[in-house]
Structures are given as C-alpha cells and as structure tokens.
Image (cartoon, one colour):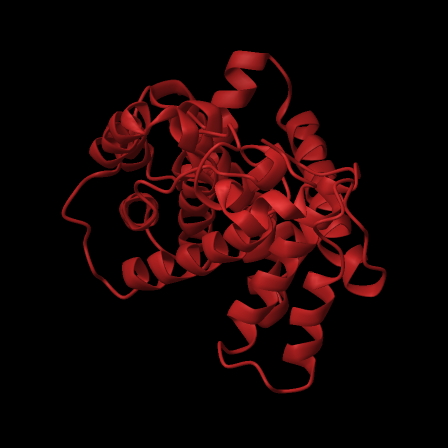
Length: 289
C-alpha cells in the first residue's frame, strides 16, 4: 500500500476502490507493523488534542510567550456568536479554532503539528468547524485525519514543510492543502477531488514568505492560519462543485518546492524581512535587529 506521490496514491484508490484515508491507514499499518486498532487509538488521541487546543482559548485566552498574541480567537468567536460575521458561520468557526490553536502553541501548550507547530491550527480549524456545522461525530473525523496525513506525508517526502526551507507556503500552504483534501473526503468527495483541492490550496498560497516578527511563531502566523483555513474551505468547495484543477497535485507540489528554494533567505524564517522588518514589527519585539 505504499505510495511515493499523488499519482500513485490515486492509482491505489482506484485499484482498491477505497478513499485516501483507507489507503493511508493501511500504509501505516503495513510499514509500522502496528495493528489497525492501535493506529485508530493513536488517531483518536490526536483528535482529542486538536479539540482541546481549538476550544480552550475561546473560554480562557492564553497569552503567548512573546506577548504578541492573546484573546484574538475569542474575539472572532464572539463576533460570530453575536451574529455579526460577514464570512458566515462555517468560515468564522474555522478561523476562530485555527487561531485558538496558535494561542496554545505560542503559550507552550500541547498541540498537534499538522504539519508544523506554526501551521498547526489549519487542519483542526477546518475539520472541527465542519463537524460543528454538519453535526458530525468524532468518529466521522478520523478518516479525514488519515486523509490529511497522506497529503502531509507527500509534502514531506517530495518537497518541504519547513518555513526556513520554503517559506510560509511550505507550512501554512501545505497545512491548507491537507485540510482541503480532508474536507473534501469528509463531505463525500472522490480521491481525485481531494487531490484537486490540495493542488488548488497550494496554488493559492504559492510564494507566501515566512517573516515572523521577532523570530517568534506568533505574528503573522496566527492570522495566516486563519487564512489557511479559509483557503482550504474555498479549495474544497471548488473541488466538490466539480471544478477540476488544471495542474495535478504532484506538479503543484514540485512548483511550491521550486519557488521555496528561490525565496531570498530574509523571507525564510529569519525575521530579517517582510512583516518582521517593518518599523512596527521591530518595535513589537523590542527593537530586534
């Protein structure tokens, strides 16, 4: 059941007439020699951590270690509950949950790197929002997490998920692709539509730089997790509507990696360019050079 790229994954899905989630789960069992039941228990633990990280700051905001974050997720959630959201409930929920996870991460709480700590809010933000909006069970989310894992595995194998190597397009961009593909399977889409959504999500954030203020995984990281969630929902909606992606996932992933290697060093997690180099950004981190 092993696969090295999206084309091989899609071929396995078609051959065995199974969704991406089942192919990924079978791969994990084969390669790790761990039973399906044990794998399932581990994934349930992943989901519990995601749920806790996405919900706790909405009730009790957490101040980040660097002092740049604290309470933003609660504000977005309150805005939705007051009926004033201009994005609609699904997107507003996804944004709030994604931002909440970044609060937990930046305050040294427990999160699931999906695929990294700096992009850890996108996948839970999207999936937990869809769970709430469509009254889904926790069990229904587990296949979606395997699906997201498959996309993350391919990104790590064939490109990068590190901001220092490929910019934020490699972190939030890949997280958004993972969430988009997972959302499509969760909502009944085909494996081909999942990969179309993942490709679209990568395309939309192609070239996004990594420029954390003060070198901290706080700002603009939190806002970009919200954008990653919005991008994932958009990409999933396009795919589920029947819109096919011109550029296959494998080619888009290669393009992302190519672009990432050519992003100047100051825009790859050095805090020497972009948002980090603005006067306000420098003042916020007490005069970093």
